[in-house]
Amino acid sequence: MEAGKSFEEKLKRVEEIIAKIQKREVSLNEMLAYFEEGTKILKECREELTEVENRIKYLIDEENQVKEIKPDEGH
Image (cartoon, rainbow, N blue to C red):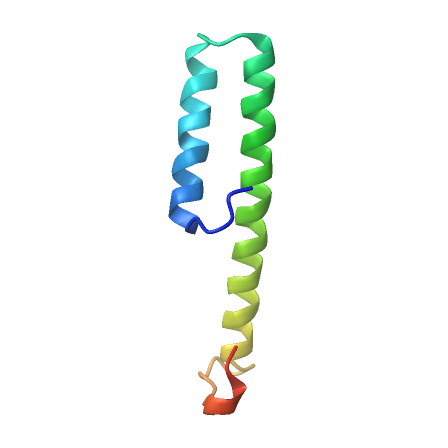
């Protein structure tokens, strides 16, 4: 849905959606559509954060030392 957009752009869109819903100047059907869009974007953001968290865990070993990454280990 929001493919190609940065994490920050996705969050900005969620903020816009929240603002529109909070104003209550849209119909119930529009609110529902915005809500659905927002939940899809947030799911994408959570997945992206999980990927980043896993990458950080990969880069830091059990003793909180940064691993040396060889060029052929590109993640």
